[in-house]
Length: 197
Image 1 (cartoon, rainbow, N blue to C red):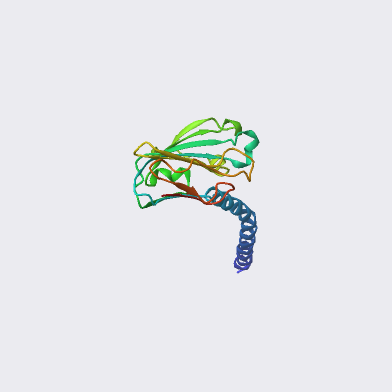
Image 2 (cartoon, rainbow, N blue to C red; image 1 turned 90 degrees about the vertical axis):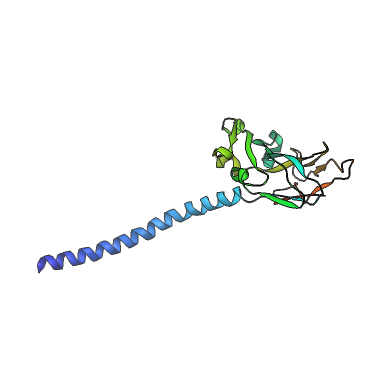
């Protein structure tokens, strides 16, 4: 009888203590989860959406991605990627994450990244083979410029240079056959929309 009285309160106290500890642990974990969520959101915040409303296929898109906040230092890190395969007329592609770009149509299978200025060795990341670009790179960079190539050899360049924020974007203008492209804005971080006519 004495044993039961002794063990019962001790067991109840242990439950209460565990509940209290759980709440304390949640308070410690919650800020970490919020920081992790913020990093994920920033990494996915600025997708590049390309609409091909032209009557011809785009044979290649050469895309440059940089950190626009480091414009006094050449916008490092700098990433280059090229599409593999055509973008057909009347289609749309959204590149929301560099690490998933190989799953898009047309895919970007690898990224050549110069990142030694931020302490990460320069490397070519073959994302189609499972390579993963570090979050320390993907969370700080944004779409900068794009070269659009057509089957007849014509091309259009548009985007922003590595310049102070607020500098106007550039556009090489219509091609001899009348192809044009426009972007909503590559002036500041935002969803980038490229429309090809």
